[in-house]
Length: 300
Ligand SMILES: O=C(O)CCC(=O)C(=O)O
View (cartoon, rainbow, N blue to C red):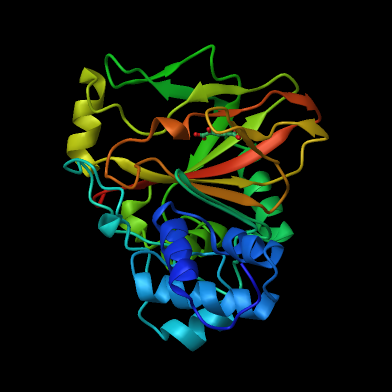
């Protein structure tokens, strides 16, 4: 490719194929720069291609370009994905809305994972930890056979939860999650708090309820699938404690105020085994997180 401000048929074809593969805006711009395009030219061409494709607007696209080119009509239209290959089980009714105050520092498309730094202020983190100290207890998991919450050796942490709208920080986070990801407060489970000591971990697991297990049926009937998860880091462990996605080779660093958002259902509307994830062992210090599971249907 040469430096060129027009979209030639070859470039056009390449842009379309990259978008169809789910490539990220920044990666496409970087490839064009490597091939000799000026950054501004590459950004303009890629933006134009995303707008023309109108299948998916990339969250890493600079907001200024989005505003110039897409005005107010953009969403992630995942149900229109060209990768759809079978009847979806879960409808993708939610989307990430670009927001200047919360720009992801990392975006993956399949599985959809976004990392945000400064998702919470230090004060919000400290307040949630302080409020949790008084009522924290050993964590439980859902027993897949019975659907009941039970103690489990795979999860060596202590936890508690905050009911919806139960304090000013929770109210702010619930509203932030709604504005950014489109899940209204009644689609959000109560805020879960976890505290891991040294050696504490949450071994690899999925957050979705396996549709084939008996124990999932009552929970799925209540408010549907956990379409997405937000894990928010309330402190920075001295060492270890990141969140690993072993099937895709990604580890998100546990850093005070950061958050990782991931979608448990893939672009075709099926539960996504690529979202297998683990809270890695804390090697020094302790780890505090707040988790929000986001449901398909209203809980209340
Ligand atoms: O501790 C972590 O980093 C992950 C927590 C987690 O997997 C969960 O709450 O579902």
